[in-house]
Image (cartoon, rainbow, N blue to C red):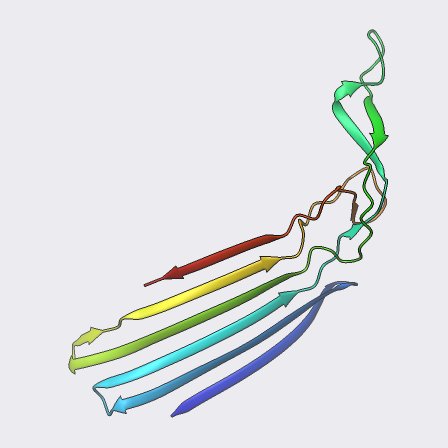
Length: 150
């Protein structure tokens, strides 16, 4: 039996921590004929976008000037009440199970199944008219994604 566990940390931008934990297990069932492998990975990317309440929203579909003056977007309130730091953190969980069957040395059969689940706390979109990495959406925008296959 062979097992391996690995853990890593990183800082991408000052507030965004990256954490990865992964493990792999290899187990021979019948020597040189059948083996199984199981793997799991968890990854957390720390958020870096801050949500600020009632920030100015620039509308590029409505002008605040009239011709012949140069176009300038209208500025209005976002009407947001959300206030959250590092709102766009995400989490990923990956699972994989496979087997290796080798009835004859040149022939290998390797069936596998895998799955992945991703959750993002909020969108990683910044508003360029705000200082720093900020946005001001009215509602949270979490995302979940599941992928299972064979």
